[in-house]
Image 1 (cartoon, rainbow, N blue to C red):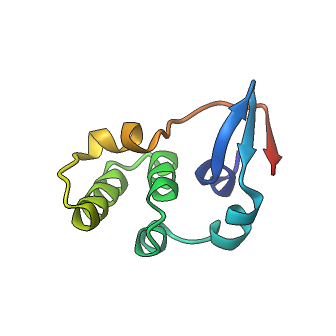
Image 2: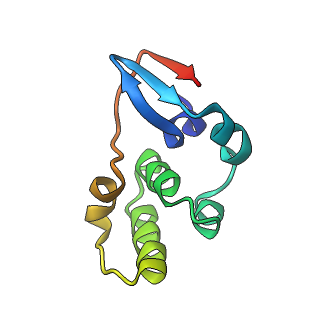
Length: 94
């Protein structure tokens, strides 16, 4: 699964990832910083998970906390936004 598919996955049907085709087209090439600037926190959290870098999760936590006034730690971000690394066999763009 590509990075763009991973960050705009909206659900799963068995082993297939369901991807928001419109969001992927419009925002799929944005960097983590650009996703955060646009307020696309769920996509940014998924991008951080895809990168596997702890500092990316920390950047998402800091940006989200600044906007929301909360105090989430980087470890809580995947659960907060419902993102995880998942193995899929195919992608369905809707």
